[in-house]
Length: 130
Image (cartoon, rainbow, N blue to C red; front, side):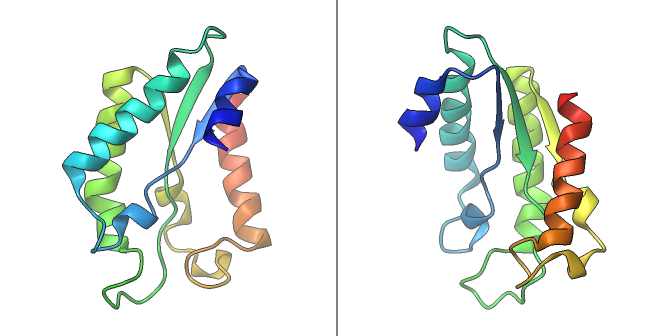
């Protein structure tokens, strides 16, 4: 899908990565920053000169058992890393973590948004890209 998305040369790209990276067995902040920065740059360098937004993933409402996405990482180091990358690349951050905090009812399984959660997330994104 990555190559296809680059080939589209869209006017706007909205990127959200990091939830799965927050799993304890995967989390490496230095590697995340390096790889995510290069990933985002590949869109910024397109001839179409698109506007690129990065999103801080939503809050995680599942119990941490060592193998799941880790809310402490998402709300802490991951949020900080994404903010730092966005500042370095002069792009806007859409913070889904903040708007989903306090709303476990927006998630069908504690991780994936349900209809209500998707609506709230879409409304937040729309505020930024209008």
